[in-house]
Image 1: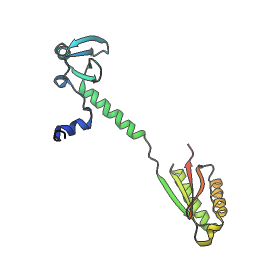
Image 2 (image 1 turned 90 degrees about the vertical axis):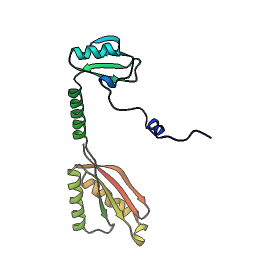
Image 3 (image 1 turned 60 degrees about the horizontal axis):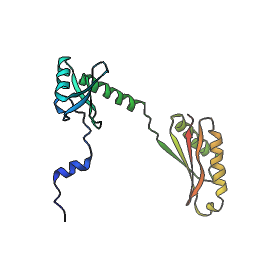
Image 4 (image 1 turned 180 degrees about the horizontal axis):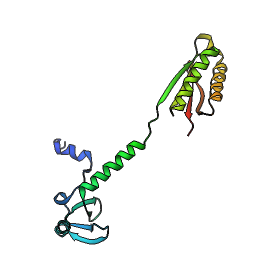
Length: 184
């Protein structure tokens, strides 16, 4: 058998601590010190590094805890954390989310209905959304899948200046599906 499970074991499962250690939170005996100008000051004892950071009125921040000895840098921690938050905010701001809009058609669609559906696809592609075009077959319509494929290719040809075919038409049960992606 084994020893019983304790709450501390759950902390071990989580992996290494991801928080940044500063000043008295650093537990190593010796550290590789980088001064406030970015120059290496060599391997120092923790107390010497803390004294140096106190003399220049800055914080000692552990930047590479996995190194041997850990690398610590002398810097203004609150300014560093603020800059990290700004970088994260900028990264979130510049990432784009891709939404997929779906349009459903029938193989025997009329011209007016087709133009309405096409205008929806154009609007979606102009908003940089991907479009999933589905043709639903009922009953004996499934005997002629080439009609559905021709309709999808006609739609792709009509919107070729705004979007391109990401995945060609393929039959999936009673539906034929094609994906259109906006132009870059």
